[in-house]
Image 1 (tube, rainbow, N blue to C red):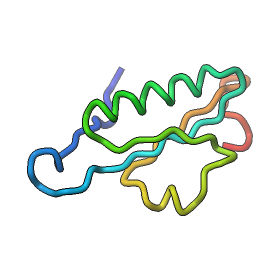
Image 2: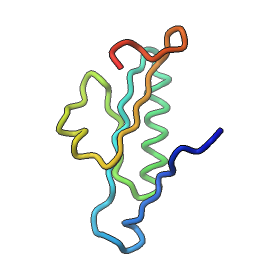
Image 3: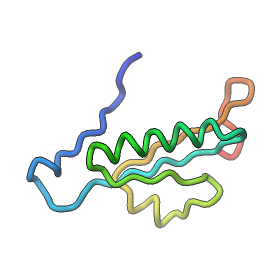
Image 4: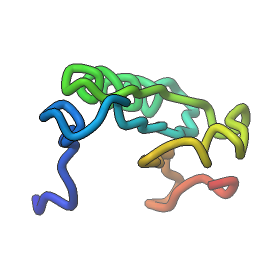
Length: 85
């Protein structure tokens, strides 16, 4: 696997006062994708990143605009993301 990006917190090195913010948007049919979203949030928080997992149907545009990064995850059907995504 190739690493696309790493969650690093340059602000923790004294470059700023606010923590970066990531929102993980997920769409889960059986709960597995939600579990993965929660694991990503836990990992981000362990790196001093403000993080939250939000259901696709409940997330608000204002919340997304306030994030420094957005991760998206979905259950799949015939190897494709679910249609709402």
